[in-house]
Image 1 (tube, each protein chain N blue to C red):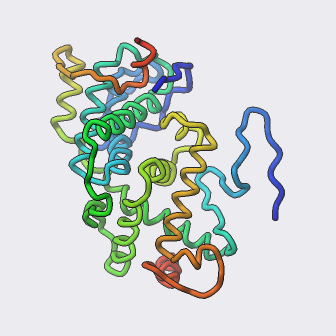
Image 2 (cartoon, each protein chain N blue to C red):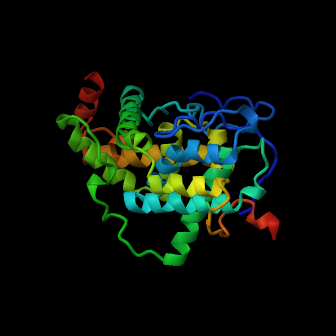
Length: 88
Length: 210
C-alpha cells in the first residue's frame, strides 16, 4: 500500500495517489483489468460525446449572440449568473 | 451561488468552435467572440447534465441569454470559461427547482447519445450510455468535463463551484460506479469469480485490442 503523498504547498492533498489529472485510476484489487476498464470508459465517453461538440451551432443561437453584439438583443436576464449574488 | 471574481488566467482553450469562427484578439477578445467559441463545450456540459438533446439545446440557449444580460458583471481578463460553465450549471439547477421534474431518470432513450460506433461495440456503448444516464448529475458532469473536454481538476472545480477535492471525488466515484454497474459489483471489489452484469470484461479487452 503506497503511502499518501506529501502535501505540497498550494496544492490540495490527493484523495488517492492514483487520482491524477485525467489519469485512469487503478481499480481496487486489479491493476490491469481496472486500467482496462478506465481506458475503455474513456474511449466510450469520447464516442458518446465528441460528436456533440463538433455539431454545427444552431443558427438561431448565433443570431441571438450577434444581435446582442449589434445592440439589438433582447436577451432576458436571470438569477443564474455567478455574479448575481454579488450584485445584490 | 457566489462567484469568486478573483482575476484568473483567461481560458484560451475554448477556441475549437464548430461553424463560424470568432475574431481573434488575445486578451481583449470581444465578449461575444468568447461566447461563440465556448458553445461546443457548453453543449457537451449541457448534454451531460440533461441527458436529452432538446433539453440540452434549450439549456445552452438559456445560459447564453443569462450571460449576455450579465456581461457587464464579467471582469475582462478573468476566467471566462469558468464563469460561463457556472452560469449554465446554475441555470440547470434553477430549472430543476422550478420544474420539480418527475421524469424517470432511467427512461432515457439509448439513442440520446447517438454514435457511429461499429456494430460490435454498439451494444456495449448502449449499455454505457444507459449507465452514464443513471449517475448523479454532478458526477456525470464532472466525468464528462474531465475525460471528454480534458479539463484539469482545478478547472473543473472552478467551473462547478466546488473544492478541488470534491471535483476529484466526483470523477472517481463516477468511474467506480460505472465499473460496478457495468462489470458487476462483485468483480469491482475483487471478491473473485466473474459475475458479469452488462458488459463482459472480454468485450472490453477485445475493444481495446481493436
